[in-house]
Length: 403
Image (cartoon, rainbow, N blue to C red):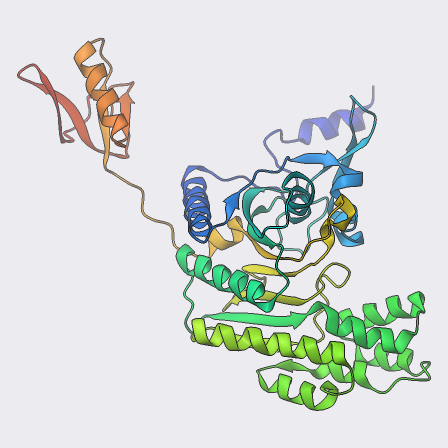
């Protein structure tokens, strides 16, 4: 007999969830669901139509053109029907891009919203969930800065709708996906290995490693090291424009885009603090324009993040300008207060009386919550009860429960 395997089985806890996988009990689930409904309704008010992508897709569709990071996060398994590899979505954005490119023909602007569970093969950080509940919006078919401004404006509006204090409590981090890419290309001159090494050092903000690598670059003009220090308040843009404004047209356009966004945010949401990071590398292989993230005071991870990712639909047959943002409803819900449990439900006794059944049905059709007292005791959420008086069932304040 194998005592070791027997001992291991005996110590297993069948109720234990995998690390990073969590559940929501009734109060928390009601809180998250309330947020989901309000935010999707808010997006609908701006013209964003709800879509529901599938939980799983073939990996050659789900992961094409999205970069190695998302590939590593995706849980994969063989499809028993086709033999092809399936993936459980780790991010809904590529799925919505596929829907715009393939399932929604036409060149019109498409505004789409979504909400659903995702699954990560590994956590993005020690504190991160492996099953984020992702909610977001995407805008396709418009390449102008006005589209990015609309998406950021909607993001901040939705955070306020969720109950996040905007004034003096929220910081919007702004960067640009093209800026570092253009500076890197000037350094590496097509050397992909050097680009990867520089990218890694820059991502870790390691000045010594960057200096060691750049010492081997004959045409280095110091621009990459300068980018490392270009983060902070709006004064960063002034310094960057003085350094790069006339040297490279693409960099100049990127800086102009960031300033345009900052000006629009300050006009629409003057209480939001702005932070510029020109060495931001999030989505380096994915984003093609402005990138942004909203941070609440005291929270180490972003409440919401997004940016421009033009032409991602090209792999599905139609390249389209695209911009959007997403939030994890679980993280968002943790930052806003939970409403106290409602006590206005109505308790109803168990009875075969057709008149009682009709009254219960009428109350529920009006949106009232009616809970049957199966054991003779009213549910704690009930502050009222149905009582029969003079042959009529009436709603009255709750009396004492049956002994």
